Image (cartoon, rainbow, N blue to C red; front, side, top):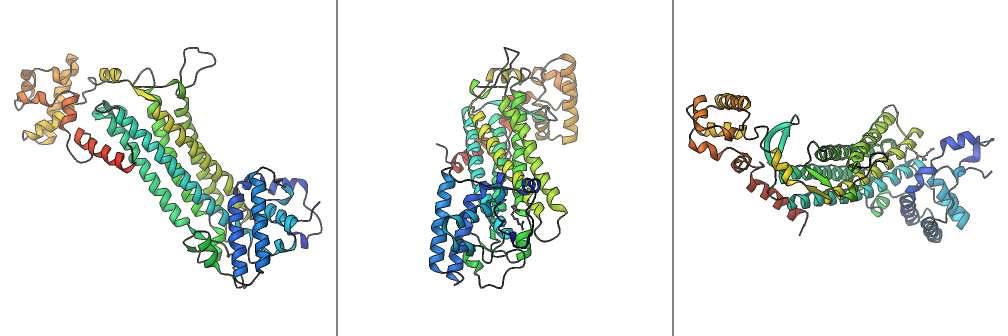
Length: 460
Ligand code: ARG
């Protein structure tokens, strides 16, 4: 057995079970690029500070480049007995270049090393997620553009409420996704501080320059407190919270589209390319991708909860428990990227069934609130107009007709305030045309919103 890098004070080697139980190489190897990036910045700083020679630095740098090439090419052998990504790379560097490699870990601990790697990894992951959110926003806006003027029932409590433009509804998701981007960017700004040089927890008496490594690695500044630097994973928690909110938004979109694809709604048809079938029922065509978007949101939310529970009982500073931060993080990122990608593909591959939607519009008195506003314009206090329209709806229910199906005499029988112009307010088209408040579903307001997104997302 090879002696451990930390083996000096030990007389026995660890048991196989302990080795298997404590290893993290099986999952933290995906940090290798960031680990090498951090080591290169560290080696350059050590040389600059006179802690290693320029020659040692150069051998370390070219050795690390060679190791990265081998890993990229799949030719690197990851060893479980070397525990984690940090010691695998350091030990491989020693195998490759000998003595100078033993100077790389000067004024460094795996505690500051791992959290530096993690911050670098998260920074990149956030950029990838933001790009995918952008693609989904574009797909939603394109779907909106394809369906100009389409009125759909708007729901509250999943009961027919008021007519809205489909574009308005889709742009609601685009707004929500934009705030998701904002949260990710905030989180990235806050996480972009460098732990490297905090060493195990207390810093070092060696003359390192933490500002130099921080700068080289593109961080805003070194973290002010070395204990804080190695002990907290709040940046991962913020990231997983932001991911959980994205997942929740996508899950709602999934739920809505699954509902709309049902025979009962029939508002949309996904193309075959984004549907799957049944192994027993030959007729089936299911919207599985969006069901799984809904389903996988649970993993993303679960990862957040895992990390919260992981961290809540830890005293300062580093604790080995923190090794368990990586799998939930990696899984959350991988899952959210897939969810975003598939949601965008789905959006680009659905057809809205205009005829079926038009058939659904007359039911549910979607124009009732517009009618109440009509009465307000005639000088009726809103509470009274609510009551008058309520009684009008009751009359319609008893006659099984729509509000626009009532004769003027019927309406005047309920209240003489009604005049001939009432019919300009009834029916979903008329109703939509009456909306004018900022952000409302009125055609002009929605056109303005759409225009905002087309130019912001640079859609041609
Ligand atoms: N693999 C460890 C982790 O992921 C690296 C740090 C280990 N530090 C230690 N002193 N055992 O957290």
